[in-house]
Length: 148
Image 1: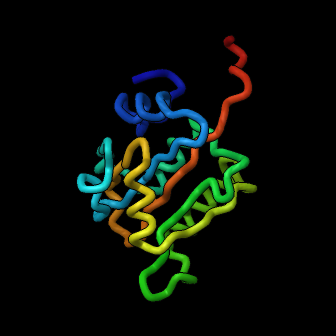
Image 2: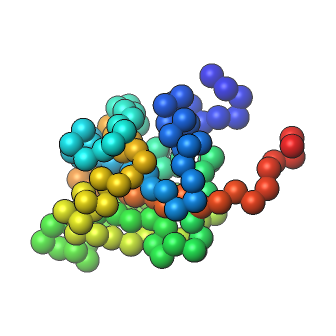
């Protein structure tokens, strides 16, 4: 355990996040996402929901304020305007974490899969709700905390 680090941020996940640069992408995926087939690097968080994983990641990693959108979800097949419950939770977490101005985009399922192929990592959670997937574009850190 590390002081001040969210317990869902495993060593593997922290390593992936620390290695990402501005504009790199990471996918937080539900349990049914084809992570092994699509991900260059797969990190397992089987006991966590996708919204909980998003909340943890945002404690240490900023979103790209210039990206439009900085977060992307998967559209519901046959009803692209639908907003799944997990996506509603993602939006609430983004707002609570100070990312309210970050626009959430969406992609058709296979377009989301294709974009996920280029992500730094796919974090497969234990999320069982359908469409519990979000892709994040990493931003920049402009200053260190008070300890520096």
